[in-house]
Image (cartoon, rainbow, N blue to C red; front, side):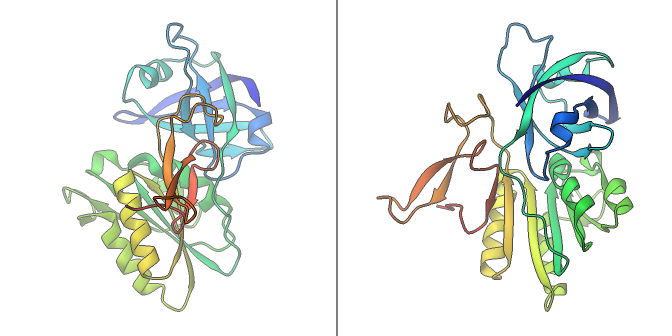
Length: 262
């Protein structure tokens, strides 16, 4: 569905990271963790393609939709400049989201950079609280940790430069978390750079732990028509044992066992 959504607020969290809140009752009522919205930015009249953004949070009672994003190019720079009262055409909720864990499941969330925006709604609604493993290049790229702790998810941090928390990759924290979760019904949920997600998926398969990964791909149509956002998934019936899957339609969330790692 396509909705005309008014911007209620659009603020800088830190550095190049921003949070925009839309009045979007039609989307807020239906959105699930891991889904995304496809936004047409009204000031980009010469560029008609929409921009995909993970759904960070919703408030169905108030009809609010929250998107947290990083200013990385012209599109997001224009989005960051939209004032309250501006109206965007927003398509959503789109795609396949995460499987909400049951009350016996111990959820381990693994987020790289602003991948933490995509897993927050899951943490908010998880019946059993787990842990967030948050990775970034440096402390400047860490966002939303306080929000996770507020909903009952303690946060463990890894930075590449060692400026905050563990010096190294967030997958190293995952190895420790899986060892500590022995005997629990652990389930891993990931969002972040593709290299991190593939390493995460391989680790979970080796440890026989279920995992779902949200693949962040560039999208054009956002509806499955253009095949610009495909990822490789396993297919034993195909000659090369894999096929292309449209991440905007069959994803962006995939089970670790579905992905082709070749």
